[in-house]
Length: 336
Image 1 (tube, one colour):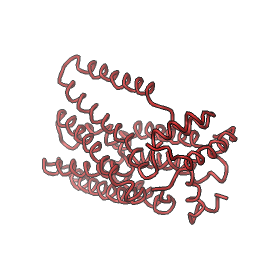
Image 2 (cartoon, one colour):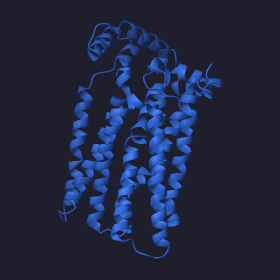
Image 3 (tube, one colour):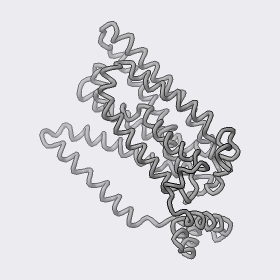
């Protein structure tokens, strides 16, 4: 639905909503945590509010022109497209959508089709982008921020407060990405964000390694420094891999395999979220401060991956995305 020149920023509204939800949940948990012994019940009950709002929103949200045209409702699709674009001069775009829809309808098995050699670049991105997004370690920091900060010497209340701070930082940093993604491009944000995250992870590992190896308790100064660096890490994630881990896979698939591609992206993301969530405490006990170097290593790999294998998708219509792969130094051997 989004116009090409604003597609990145509008797609990132999803990430903004997610991060604002995380921040709101952290603040609710912080507040209800003081209402003993029934505060946790109130926290769970309030979760029904966004569920109701999403249900109402699902009823009111309009169908996309692509979806309508793909189901044969061309007149209605044209009206929605004209309403979205704010003009009746949509003939060229409408023809592109109709052509793409006819091709999509000719594909009876999208999941089988996405495994074909010519769709290899999109399939690789659908798997690796969400995998790398989780392997930045962001979920570990957000899920277990209280544990991390308690380990560093913070009290119980300070730990909850610190997790609320990281949630606020994550939400606010998304605005940076929204403002720059359609100007600087996807690759620039992913690469620079990756470099900043690597530096932050290494610094935290060095500080914790030097202090804990000598059985010293972190001083208030060093604890504060660690929290600041972690917040800088969260900022880098918030304007790079956080939103772009969803935006890039959403815009690279042709219409005939888009549903299958998005399904794979979400499934991979949830799978690795589960894996890291279940294994983080064990990894933390085994690696100690080395856990930050573990994630820094993965961020290094994903930054190199983006530099070598991800073409710039800024300003490219979805219907013309196939030409990027045909021109790419590596993927052109797969796309015929």
